[in-house]
Amino acid sequence: QVHLAESGGGSVQAGGSLSLSCAASGYTIGTYCMGWFRQAPGKEREHVAAIDKYGSTSYVDSVEGRFTVSQDRAKNTLYLQMNSLKPEDTGMYYCAARSGPYRCYTPDLPTTFVYWGQGTQVTVSS
Figure 1 (tube, rainbow, N blue to C red):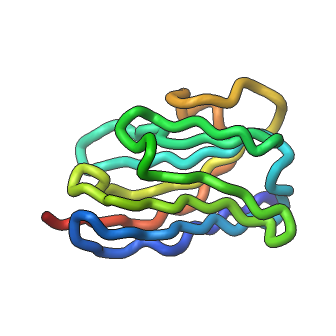
Figure 2 (cartoon, rainbow, N blue to C red):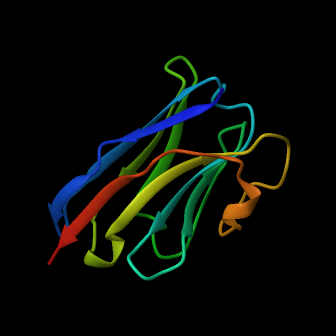
Figure 3 (cartoon, one colour):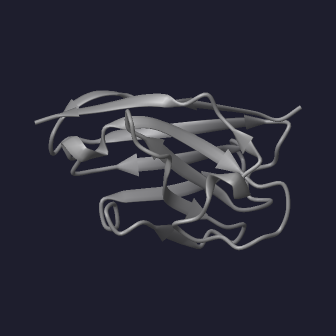
């Protein structure tokens, strides 16, 4: 059974940084495309970063240059380093994984990802 567990969320002031982790069990990081999504209250879930099995990354324009997605196969963990945070980055952040080979870029539909974590809250105050 696949289990993805996010951690590292919290509250920071604008300009600050947070590092999110997504520990996987029952799933091997780096096998297929994985991604990070976020969802603010009253808004749709937004795909912000993706990484394929080769380590190639893709970002939505609003986080390009500020967020970095990476994967550590030895620790079987996905990461999202978030710098220069803005109030509009506030939301619940989810990691997600695919179950087979498929395109890997942002933005993409949440429905193309099969496995999801429970989310970790990020709050950025001005």
